[in-house]
Length: 326
Image 1: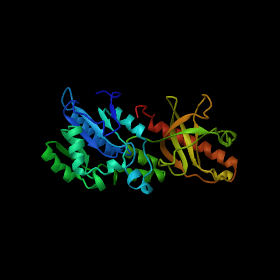
Image 2: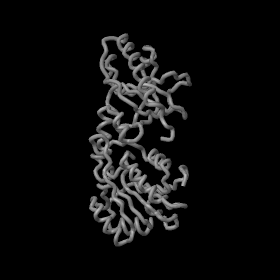
Image 3: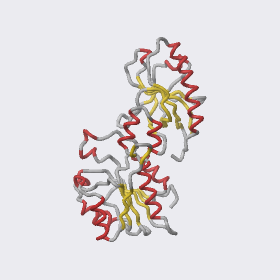
Image 4: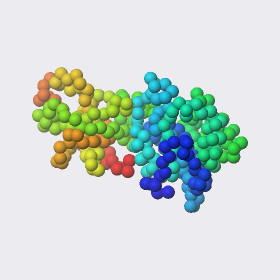
């Protein structure tokens, strides 16, 4: 099925895939970052479902919210991706059906046996299940890959357990990616994500200091429930009204001006469009150029910003543009 025709099901109650083409191949997980390891599971699912013409049904079962937001709200991790963007990316990967309900206390109470019998077998009618090596499910996470393998044997569906995906010396995981982002190592986080890390936010009025320095910036507000890169100056690509602009972003509190209020602000290179106040920007973080620091004067800061711009332009030129299909 071509991208753009994915079926979205947002409740388990309305789930019924009995008339979907066979083989029905499903992968399940939180997929909170949709990083390289998650993508590997999706690709295995697509390959198994579409191996033969006219092809079967590739199904992804995930959640619109993180399970810890219900199970242990104090420990819910920072988001790497919104539910809406997760759906868009899965659609573009070629998934046929996305089952993405809210994780609720009722969902948390589903036993492993009921999950298999009611959801996988009766509602989804699966022929093939793809899961990660560390996949756990059901009440208190009591279901695991060993349970699924035995259940598949009894219920006559194939279970495929995928190995860990590594990058350099690390296992690719959402936890590690969050750590890298919060350390400012966005280039490495992006390599594990398989795409640049992104944040969206509206522009708001600032103090106008950037204009006075010759680098007019747009101040943004980022949702604090998402992972925010460490303070510093970054080379970025910015999506605005369907067009991508190169730029550089400062995240911090403007210590040169004795600032105390945290604020992200972005300077778009060669931008000659309308004013940016009140508009929504999507910022792709490409590379951190330096830490934020206090300069002895506005003139010294202006000189350093000129150096930052040269560095940012060189980084962006070497990396190439953003694929808008992402």
